[in-house]
Amino acid sequence: MLEWLTAICIFWVVTAIYLGGTRVDLEGGSGFRQLFGLFDMLVLYLLVWGALHALLGGFAGLVGSVMIPSVVAVLALPLIARVAFRIVGVKMVHVEGH
Image (cartoon, rainbow, N blue to C red; front, side, top):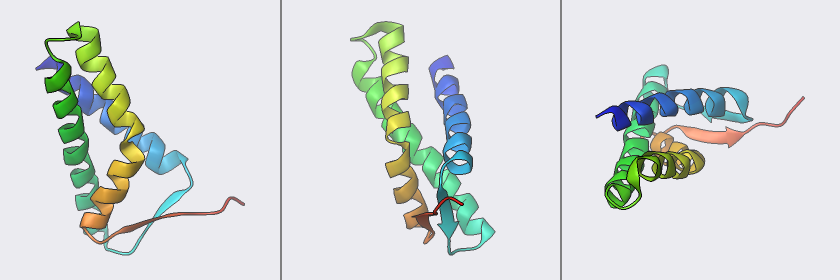
């Protein structure tokens, strides 16, 4: 059960860095749609992480069954974010720097 807590904590930190620190902006939809998009993003992230964790659980030991799914899920986070926000009708766009 501690592995899932690790995955959830990593998600919130990396998502805050990705959505707040990169040049992406959310267009369209209300605040509620954006909030639901964030929760959809969490669900999709945990689905990817959980599938990889289940596949590597007995094979790679603790480090491989937690670290490898975490790294792969974090690297897939931009794609997960686009899909999750598109589900609720919010568009992610890249903005130009100043």
